Length: 192
Image 1 (cartoon, rainbow, N blue to C red):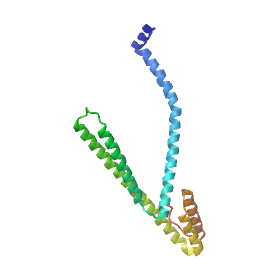
Image 2: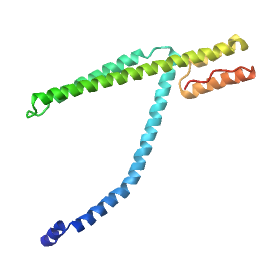
Image 3: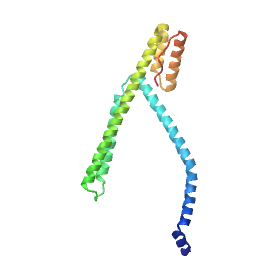
Image 4: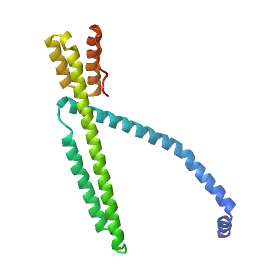
């Protein structure tokens, strides 16, 4: 038996065939796993984008600026970076020279700068979206205001302030579009 195993180990053709069979089986099994992981990723990204959109709509309705989110993200990122930097500098193997420890600190500092830059750009973009949503809605309401009574205007503003999701936002704007169409008005396009 040992003699047969030794001959198999020494014969590269047989090892190639065995490797090809094992690789083919892994490949055939990986396609359904890859499809499952892809579908999972798509569903998570859809949920995340819908969650993010609903948060932006709530920010726009509340009239708050997104600077508080920026401060929270900045503190959170700083906390994570300090924890990871402390972990890596304390648990580095003793055989690593001080120069390479200094290099790793420089790399960590560069990563921190990129994370802060990303956070700043993300928050600035969110802030611009919130401001644009508010401005666009005020503009649309200002266009149709002379053509509706005060009760209807208060009702529409009430619907604006009670928006909880994208569906509420689209329903309100659909109602504004209907009012504008019945009065032959042209409203600016929605911002989303």
